[in-house]
Image 1 (tube, rainbow, N blue to C red):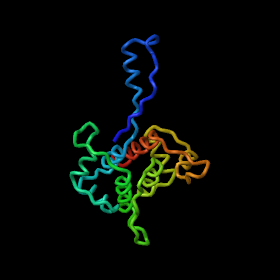
Image 2: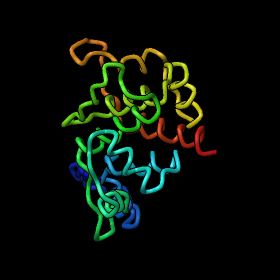
Image 3: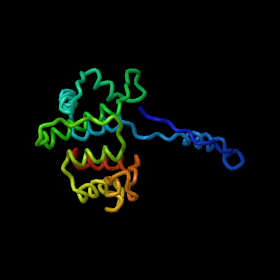
Image 4: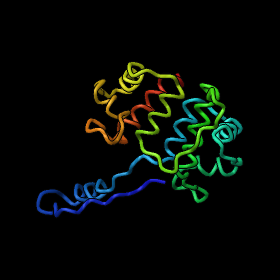
Length: 185
């Protein structure tokens, strides 16, 4: 589900026309990337059908049915749209890891995290696709976004370290876009 954040309004009436003021007021609303956006993007990138999506959730330890998956993939404006929780998206990403890399050697299933950050989503995709930092930088560059190796490595550090940085939506969005360009085309 998209989260809308409203910034404090500014009186632009003395500086701009009414038309410009309206577009400025609309631009106060910033839409952040939702879990559903990530799920839709990955489905499109790898061309998963409904049954494949259900199987990926199952491999991640989550039992889902077709209507539930369908509602998660609907647009936000749709009446049947349902937001996907972090734990459910984590189960999907864990299923993607199992699908692409196989089951862990110890045979223990991956546990779905209760909360997800962009950093964790990026890490899980890196593991699932067996990507090195150079591969990730190339994928991000394909999307038209530049990121240094130091910036990328900061996303994968321990949050307690001073060099750790939060992965912003813009970076994740461009990485997903780069994945689409690489795997879909």
